[in-house]
Image (cartoon, rainbow, N blue to C red; front, side, top):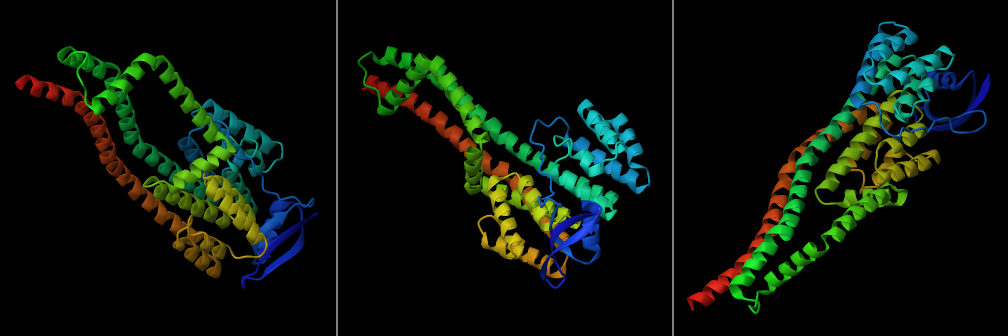
Amino acid sequence: MAKFDFVATKQNGQTISATIDAADRMAAMSSIKSQGLRLISLHDPQGRQTSKMRLGRGGKKVKSDELVMFTRQLSAMVSAGVPILRALASMAQHAESAAFKKAIASVAKKIEGGEPFADALSHHPEVFNDVYVNMVRAGEAAGILDDILKRLALQQEKSAAIRKKIKSAMTYPMVLIFITIGAFFGLMLFVLPSMGETIKDLGGEDAELPALTQAMMSISNFFVDFWYIIFPVIGVGIWLLLRYIKTPVGKKQFHNLTIKAPIVGKIVKKVAVARFTRTFSALIGAGVAVLEALDITAHAVGNTAYEESIKKAAQRVKNGEVLSHIIAEDEELYPPIVAQMLSVGEETGQTDSVLVKVADFYEEEVDTAIASLSSTIEPIMIVFMGGMVGLIAASVMMPITGLANQIEA
């Protein structure tokens, strides 16, 4: 038997700190839950936090759809009473990708060697992230692994659906942007120089051109003379920008910028809130301690601004503050409904079910916002393209009109 230090709240909201003797961490969680306590944090005998922060940040070799299918099928097999090793062996045979097949086989081998299912999954963070591992661990402890796997599959489906909709909505605007850039350089490199030669032939070398035409001709000449420098510089600039965004400082600045950006900012906030509420509710519903759930959720949201906010909230919860009050203070990141519904959940002891409703609401809001994104950006891009082409056309037509008037005179 080992000693585990824990912090939990009673049904009346009172916070208690105590020590419990248990064979392992899962047994400790089960014992605390059976006493009607809501677990906030659990520490191992050495006093270290037991959650494993091993997030799969490497290259994804397994498709999200394949992981969802695996989770659903495993849930059905476990629910039907099929032993976990037999279920995994069957799933490994029918896995689509070689990487996933190898991961499942490795998990089965670890379990055969005596490791719990969750610990075996944690050896493959590139496939099973921290949310997945901790929910499975909680499901094993509570004896509801099949139900937890169903929740995981649903959560993954929702997250994958949001990602696909965002990518789909951004495809058309990105195509328009590339067409606009291509049209601009095409006009400046090929069309305007030839038109400029025609104008000079008609008006002569001493012909006085309008200021707009002179400016556009100067830009065109610059592109024609130094294209071999301009394009590599642009390419290197984009590469350096992408590299900078991947750094901690650059990522933080980029995420803060996206939150404050017009049009896109509202969608980013709704996506982050939907991820926060659904992930946190799933972990709490699975019996994961509040502090662990917050720590895991902070990394799962995918936005550094929200990650820092949730981590600060976790620290304040550890000091005895109520989570709903903390969330209510940050109106820039969290709409009032999140704090209000969280408060209701804390009072009724149904935080997980209440937050699921909030997640459903904001996922519907994201769907609506994404659907209108293309219709909002499309006219802006068309006006921009029209303005650019119109500017070049005006710079060409103005001197031709002037020459025509001189000939008539």
